[in-house]
Image (cartoon, rainbow, N blue to C red; front, side, top):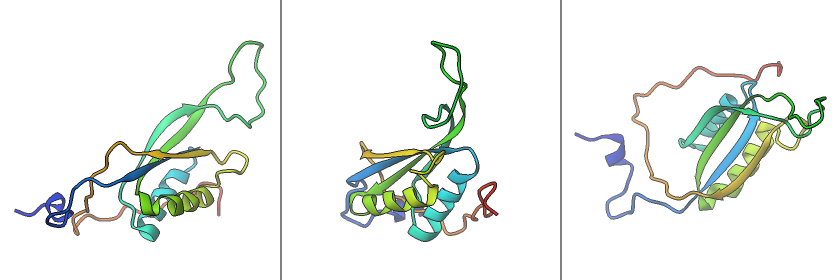
Length: 137
């Protein structure tokens, strides 16, 4: 029985690769879904995840009482595993698409991944429906 994992590594090749982890914090406005969908369709990236988190925008104007933090809001933490050779190109792609660097656009960083394993998806897995960012009509 062949599984996706068995077909994803060429004979004699190591299943582990030198890779980098790109982490991006974006607003909870659908940017994460658009980003992951675009990474898959345009760059062939299959190793990306999104998780909900609470965050405080450092550039956001907030009034608080002395000694208190501003109210946190829902944000999305997106992690992308990329081979070393593609990491900087993907970083630039994500930065542009997610609007990082613009007011309220989020933040991102690049670091080493401890380990990553190559894999492919089976051919019969349907794609999710397309998603667009709220307010970007």
